[in-house]
Length: 100
Ligand SMILES: [Zn+2]
Image (cartoon, rainbow, N blue to C red; front, side, top):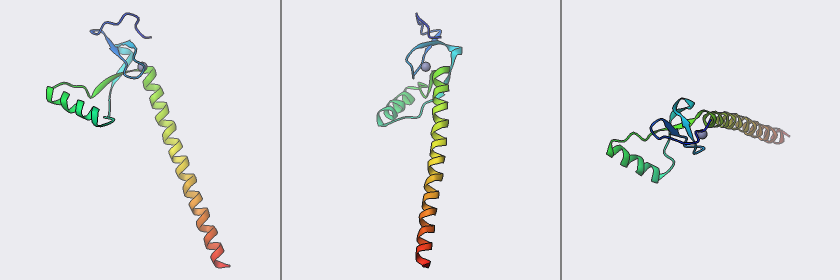
């Protein structure tokens, strides 16, 4: 449940849905840098001694993200299998054409 009146000392800001949550309603995850700007920012923070690699994400957003990643992985596998079957079918067709 998002917090109505957030207190930065006891609540955390979800990086995904931008709402405030109790600390136990989510977890800290590693964020991979998305581009040169965030890499520069991370480097700056590293020089300043700040730990910004881990960000808070609420349970709901984390579940949605995990579900999306699972679907994405399955989709990639299925598309890869279909593509390899397609290549095999074309190869078989070429081979059968050549033998006639
Ligand atoms: Zn969230």
